[in-house]
Length: 300
Image: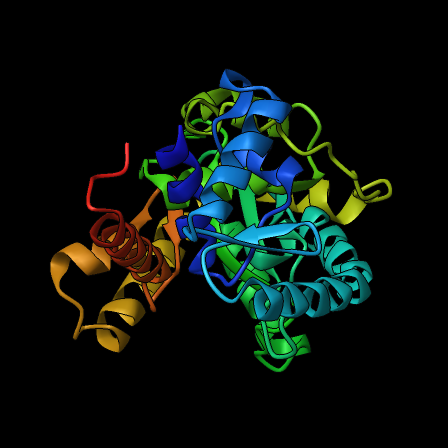
């Protein structure tokens, strides 16, 4: 069980994010150990120098500095949450959108001064690329192409709710998503991604804050206008236009990296050109290897 705890702390150390006892219950061994047993494991690991502890936070190294950084970024996240909810409402009012989640660092209660607010979005089938294009045009025209408060980087449709990549990074992202719109659809998404909660048996879906969208008159009128063949042609055109632009802009990426970071299909749009997933997983494995070398055995 010590190995599970160390692996959990190693993953979150990539983000300089020490964990509380409650969070270790959520992201660590879960219900397989009691809180008292987990506390004893932590005390033993701290006693042999494998981990550090400061002000209720546990981590691998230099926990005092990481805890201070975490508290600062949490205060900034609180101050930015009204903006995140305001933008969630704008996204939810867009035609063909059926669910909106706050994702990334904000969904974990953290934010950086120049960091983005990320959104994970679910659309109706066959109109994902129309919806995405409307949002991108809004960002370019009204937000001067700023990503800071409006980073719409992952879309799925309601017929393809399962996240395809299954690893610690994607599982963490799924279980920490903060639903802001889409009662029913958000529950279906979490149900379709039960694999993530099996990786984190102590985690539960975050309750929705459900932003109001009013009567949605404009939204549903556009959906009627583009509900037939014209909408089909437009969606295909938007997808192909975006794919060609990405191929020109990110042509230096190899085929595997392009597929992972810029997935482009009728039912999914993923725009992560910096391939943050691989960077995080590589950082995590580096920490695991360092721990195994220090301890002289593999972590379970």
